[in-house]
Image (tube, rainbow, N blue to C red; front, side, top):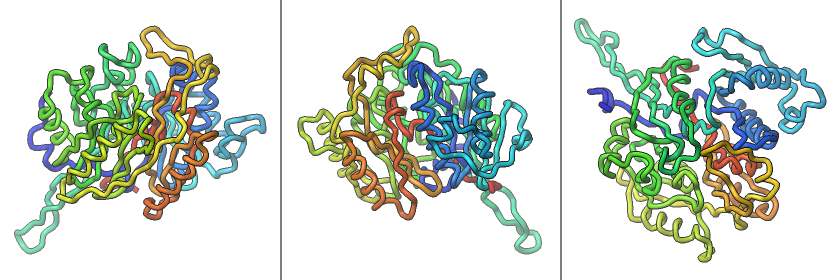
Length: 432
């Protein structure tokens, strides 16, 4: 893998809380993640899609098998013509919105799709096959490259230099969170093609980082040159074992344009991604971080979070600022798989399986910034008070965004949460 010469020094990885063109998601279909009955996952995904469309575009990938049905259902409830028996419509409250359907898809013909205009924003449903629904991890990581072009004349014979921010898509190699060492399913070939396929449809140039293995959930940016990762994930044996820690850091700096990498030691207990950073810590502003926390010393998460807290307190960001750390407590009662949950799964050969009573990696840090909102996981039941506390803490940090609670246990059963199923597409030159 060679880094493009002369290209990386102008690249910037925007923070998630910066303005978006839109968000990438993938419809939940895999039985080993979402079960034979996918209605719970569909409800959660649809609620997130609705909230995001209030302030930005949505790009939804759907398999060839489900494409016609998903286009019909979204088209029906978006235009207010869905039948009263359509539970997806009733549950998510998406009916009655003014919609204009377009088949042009901005003139991009590389992928078949249907498109709807909803309240001034676009919902594009694209027929692209995937292995699962983790858009954060399999989709491209979007950066902005400040390309310098010649501008107009200031005086006779003198021209200005103009910086034009151009969006580019970084394509990492994806191997299902560990490949043959500890990957979560045996065949990830379709997932590994998603980033390039979507970037091609969107019309964005691709920076090809393959065969360097990375997932979008394993990195978090402040937009000002600082990147957060976890050692437990990026140094795991199933990703880039031939590279040292310093070599991995140099790759991150080159492809993402960051100047400093913060290596948190650990993530969330029982996180099957080898502890992605987006489940344990996130930037909420320059120099400000939320960190998953528990005061319960008997909880296995306590030592993991304590180690991360001590590390972050000893570090500064790329601008030399000490970090302000906001503790965001995890659910008080561990969220675990039930017998009913297990009975709904259909696992394929080579796929990681769950067991009754297995603790899931529940964390409120796995929220998502849309242009106007923060979408926060909620787990309900015995954790109702923990849910409310998380909303309150994030409301105090929201900087004017609405804080929207989303019941997300059905996403957690798939192995991740709201942040894991979304991938932001930052604004760039020419976007409307």
